[in-house]
Each structure stands twice: as C-alpha cells, then as structure tokens.
Image (cartoon, rainbow, N blue to C red):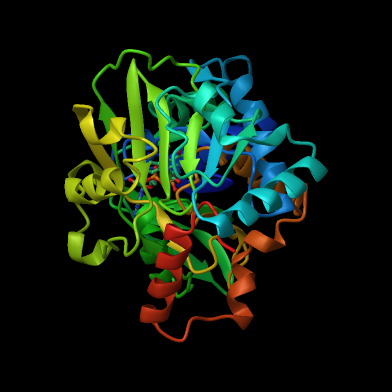
Length: 406
Ligand SMILES: Cc1cc2nc3c(=O)[nH]c(=O)nc-3n(C[C@H](O)[C@H](O)[C@H](O)COP(=O)(O)OP(=O)(O)OC[C@H]3O[C@@H](n4cnc5c(N)ncnc54)[C@H](O)[C@@H]3O)c2cc1C
C-alpha cells in the first residue's frame, strides 16, 4: 500500500472523486483516494441527477453554472461516459406567497445571466403534459438546467483521476486523521498509515465522525432522502422539463421512459452513523414509501400521475444537511492541511465538478479561485448551535424549504 502522498482524499463519492480528479489534472500534487467501500458506491450513485442553476445566492448560481458547463463536456474533460439531457426545468408556486420566491429567483437569475422567465400556468402545462394547471399561482421556466445519469459521475471522476496518476484504495477504512502541532500529518487506515500534509474529509454521511475523531467540530446531520422511479409511461419523453414544486417540495424528471420523483418532506429522518455501525452500507438505508405516497397525495391536483403510476424502483441515500443550507467546503481553521468537501444539502453531486475544481485550486494555490467564505466551516465560529436538537430543527427546516420560502 502507498505510504506517502501530498493529499489524501477520504471518500470517493462525487465530492471526493471530483476533488481528486482536479488535483491529479493539475499535475502538481500526488493524490490517494481512500474509501471504506467500493469506489463511488455510497450516496452518490443513488442521487436524482438534477442540476438547478436558479439558486438562492450569487455564489451558488456561479458554482452551478460552472458545474453545468463541466457536465456538458464531461466526456471530453475526463474521457469517461456521461449521459445527460438539457431539458430545462419548471418551478411551480401553488401558494400566492410562493410567487414571491419565483419573482426573487427571476430577478436574481436574470442579473446573473440565467435564461429564466415567469410563464403562465397554461404555458407550463403546454411544456409538460403531466402537469395540470389547477391550483398553480405562478410558474417559472429555467432554460439552463440539465439532468444527468448519477451512477456515472463519481466513478467517472475517480477513473479519470486514476488515469492521471491518482491512486485509488477501495475497501480501506480511514480510522484517524493524524494532527501534530496543529498540522495534518497523515491518516491511519485499517491497512496501514499514509503520511500527507493535506487531508480532504469527503466522507459523506461519515464526515462528521471522521472530523470529530480528530477533535474538529463540523455541524452537519446525515439525513435520509429517497425517490421513486416509475414504470415507463406514454408521453414521458426524455426532453420534458424537470419540475420543482415549492411548497410541496416535490421534484420530477424523466427517467428511462418513465418519471423519477422525490420529496423533501417536513420532518425528515436523521440518521446516526454511530448507531448504524462502521460496516453500514448506504444501499441498506431504511426506506419508507409512505413518505412518497403522502407527497403524491399532496400534489395530486397538479401531478395526478404520481398517485397512479406503477413504481419500478425505490431508492434512497444519506446526504448531509447543515443548519443554514449551505455546503461545507474549504480548510478547517483548527488544523493546517485539513479540508472539508461535504455538507452537501442534497445538492452535492450536481455541484461536484465546480467544488472539486475550486477545492483542488485552493489546495494547490493556497487560495480559492472565487470567494467561498459562505461555504467555509469558519462561518460557524459565531453561530455554533446551542444544541444538537437546534441543529436538527434548523437542518429539517432547510431540507423542507429546499426550493425557497418567503
Ligand atoms: C435520493 C437522492 C436524490 C438526490 N438527488 C440529487 C440531485 O438531484 N442533485 C444533487 O446534486 N444531489 C442529489 N442528491 C445528493 C447527492 O447524492 C449528494 O449530495 C452526494 O452524493 C454527496 O456526495 P459525497 O461525496 O459527499 O458522499 P458519498 O457519495 O456518500 O461518498 C462518501 C464516501 O466516503 C466514504 N467513507 C466514509 N467514511 C470513510 C472512512 N472512514 N474511510 C474511507 N472512506 C470513507 C464512503 O464509503 C463513501 O463512498 C441526492 C441524494 C439522494 C439520496
């Protein structure tokens, strides 16, 4: 086993693999990616694969546009396959108050150069034959959005990183990050030590355990998220726009001749990775179809198909939520050489090319290519959560209000 590298990346999901790829591509750092499971096998391949450019802040819009551009040339850039569709999306407000969310998205998005417009509900119906205009107060069309095939992303980045000299160590568990005199000096694994001055904690649902074992606090909560894929449906064309419904927090996109859909329910299930145990595999995440059935009932006037279509696949995974809904990316002030790539807030795969590229540049050049202070773990210095309960309440609120609130 390799015993020395410039950078150890813990985790080969979208965030870790993309970081490793851009580090290897720079040619200026030797990289080893360590994963306790098979490469790219945990939450990342289970995502919906939807990329949304109309975000709540300017920095997120910039990152999502960058990520979208990387996905469009993924194969050219990495040499790996990626199926993606430029379908655009519809955002739907049912409550009059949520029309303000759309007005805000349109104003911010236009200022940031996005192709988005408010459209009448009848036009939304014309663009998406499964959508009924009943009870729709306002609608927005976003021309920029794409969706992609999730299982191809992290594995594609990992293979491309390996092709550029990175080492991949699957089925190898990092048991501790070594910190000496306030600086990272490497990691211990169940197969031996690796010395390194830089470690990236991209351990997904296990990020917090990994950091806290080295005394570094990171306020994020592993959270179950699940979706259905329906059987093939007449009219479910791959180029139908994705749909996002603000108050119901339901999303839909075409998938293999049917529809893929999920919900950010009120009161999500948080998971304790210590209780699940070190051998837990995300494929065994306890799922609950009743959550999705209730969501289908909630939107039955607008999307009756979700209540009637047969289900071909029910899958879920464990993204991590933060109390303010922003990712956690960049250095941990408590230990030189310790970086985070986590706190994905159920949007880690779509943003992974942009964050991986930015983090790699940060590690190599000593500064990020754009101001990422909004994503820094240092932002929690003045806002430490009084209790785990408060963190979970805030994380649950962020989760359910994924598509915005007034
Ligand atoms: C149903 C569903 C739908 C989603 N839809 C979308 C979407 O449309 N768009 C979007 O952007 N995001 C979506 N997401 C979220 C997305 O999946 C996550 O944001 C993303 O996959 C997070 O990637 P990651 O690299 O942080 O985690 P992971 O993919 O889980 O990778 C973390 C890795 O770290 C490894 N690891 C952990 N501990 C250790 C250790 N001690 N030693 C070695 N390795 C370790 C794990 O084995 C794992 O492979 C969805 C998620 C789900 C579940």
